[in-house]
Image (cartoon, rainbow, N blue to C red; front, top):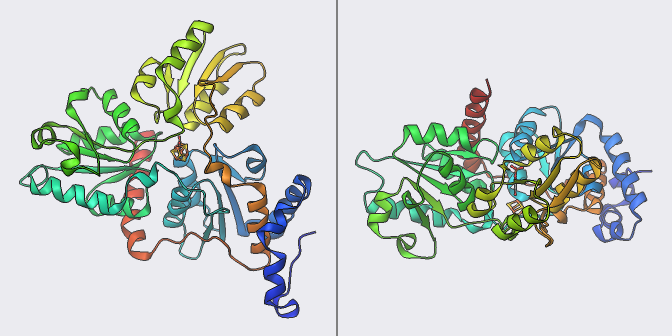
Length: 384
Ligand code: 13P
Ligand code: SF4
């Protein structure tokens, strides 16, 4: 049974002790699972649990809604009735939910250590510094326009920077239509922080590699000459995902050699040399839909996070599904959201304690919302 404590009767200290995370680490998996479900029932429509596709099975089992990073941001904006959004994903996703949610809603990330190393590769100070350098050398200004576009995997402050500068947010599921719109309306684009998604998408529009400049925030002019920056159509931030970076072109060669009729399906956070050799690439939802709609007996080598690939293997025993690389391509920060953290966060909510709240300050929220709403409206227009 979930302990619904009366704080006045039992005292603040007892409440704190009862809900200490370390107590949950000693409980059995069955007990943890039962506690989450009881808390969910007690809270009813006051809470919605969102789960990203990279979450482990024992967390996904408790999610009300699952999705890719775009779908989850839309879901967060639509569940206006829920007082609490418990986000089983990583920090930038919870921030986006807070920005898109209602003012009275509270977003909870069950483990505050669930970050994203790629998002950490660009700080807003570095982005502002790069922008100033581009202005000083005349790449921006005097009638020349550059659209800043940030991948969802970035801080709220960078989303706000894009909102303030006519830019937008994108995810791997809508990068193509958003590039299309912004490439038509601006002279150049600057894309943060994932160089691979930026490069892979730019190539889909026929932008040659010598018209893409890589901006290294630790070097003057990002490590480029002025001429290279003036000449570039697409400026790419030097960031990457270390999980998807483990997939190498030789893995594709190897699986094709072992199984000639296998199809290679990867996430566009993989390097261009891997995407180029693959059969298909797309967001986590695209990967799930592609495998789901494939015929029985089809063979897939998938280049994305391990927990998603294992779930697909379990779900489709009639298909041959394997991870593209033999290494452990697991997102360790996504994995930090364990059922124990979820049970702890949920039972605290039942007791009236909001733990691990993710709250973006009002000024950042205002401009980040502009960039996120632009993303959603342009994506919806494109889907019509
Ligand atoms: P999706 O938007 O495809 O869900 O990807 C999010 C992510 O972090 C991939 O590493
Ligand atoms: Fe970030 Fe990569 Fe993990 Fe996605 S898989 S959350 S990009 S570290």
